[in-house]
Image (cartoon, rainbow, N blue to C red; front, side):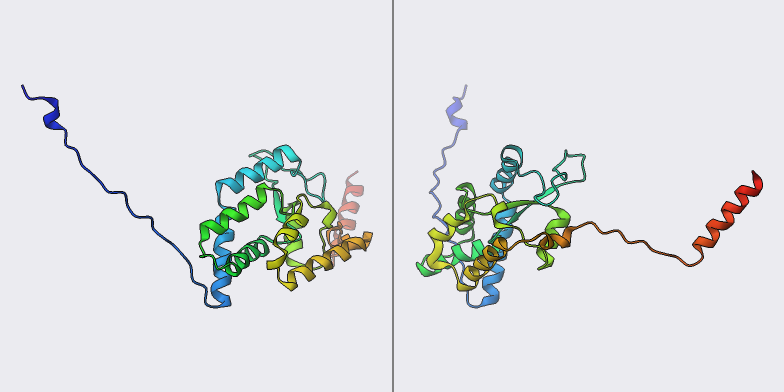
Length: 220
């Protein structure tokens, strides 16, 4: 009877060499596409989704800062709270980290930069604020609504201090402008999200209502 060893073959395999992946940026268009790709990578990562879920479930970032009664619901609820980056957008943050890599002469790799951006979130160095979908759209598409910086969660000042050498002047100016606007907030600053009811008068409607009322009186 043949031994079981006769049916076993040993195969030796060499360890594959590490594959190096680096990105070359030659113009502003390539840079913006690269940053957008990293943004998408961060937002779609399991680490980011887990982090946002933790903030909503444990830190209280489940209600809109403008509409306190709008709260993140159950899976069956249509209401959802979206997390907005403030005063620095996610694009700004990725851009700053990218500038650091370029300044230090490091090889550019999507995963490395995305990991550092995600690490900044977990270190609580990123400003975040919960908004309803409507408020979020207004903030992004209009200059009429400012998110007060004292309503932001996260120590974004620590990020600014740590990465200050690589933060461009226009970003610094944007932060200073928002700080100044926060100090000068008035009730009118929130007009963009005030409820407004419009009464539409339609020609002939009043006459029809009068005719219906007359018919009711005659029937009675």
